[in-house]
Length: 261
Image (cartoon, rainbow, N blue to C red; front, side, top):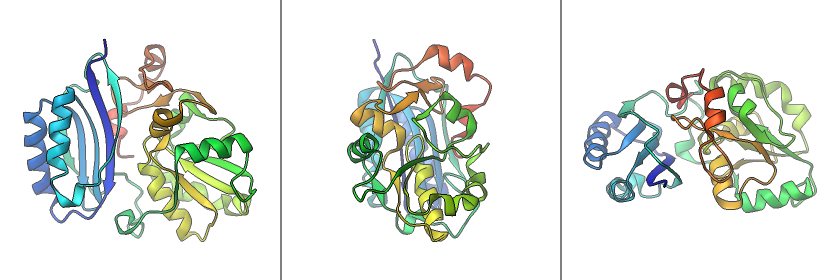
C-alpha cells in the first residue's frame, strides 16, 4: 500500500540570503525525516520531497511561517517507498536555468490557464475567442518521448536553456493562435511565458501547475503516454502512479541531476 507522500512545488519570490535559508530548511527537513531535493536561489524555491504525511505537513507548516513562502502550493502523489535516496538542499544561480537574467518571474507571472478551462479548450480545439489552440511543450526531448498532450508542438531541445533560441523562429507561425505552454509542474512554463511576452508574442498562457496539476484535477484526458518526473519513479501515469516499465526505459538520463534544467 502506498504510504509515502511525495510533493513537488515551487515559488518565484525574492530571497535575500538563500544560503541562510538553506541551512534552516535542511535542518527542518532532516528533523521531519524527509528525502528529496530543495533548490534555492535569489529568485525563489523549487522542491521535490517525500516522507510521511505527518512529516510533510510539519515541514510545510514551518516553511509557510516564512512570510515570503506562505503562498507556496504543492502537487501531491503517493508511492510505496521514498523515490529519493537522501536529502539535498542546494543554492543555485537559478531554480530553473534559462540563462536570461532579464526574465524575472519573482516580479510578476504571466497569465495562466487552469486545468478545467484547458480541458474545455482542448475539447473545442480553440479558446473562448475562437482562436485555434496550440499546446506548446517546453520540456526536454526525452520527456516529450515519454508522453505529451495530443498534437502538441515540440521544440526538440536537450535542456530548458535552449528554449529561447528554439521559440524565436516560431513567432510568426504562432501569431493569432491561442498558445498554452506546459511542462511537468509549471516552473518552466513561468519563465517560458515571460520570455514569449518579451518577444512581443500575445494570446498565450502557461498551464497552471503543469501536467501534474492537470492529472490531479481532470485526469489524463488529451494526454498520451506518461509524465516524466525527476526522482526514482521516473514516470507517472494520469492517476499519478509510478510506471515501472516506463521507468526502466528512462533509466539512461540522470533525472535528479536535471531537475533545474
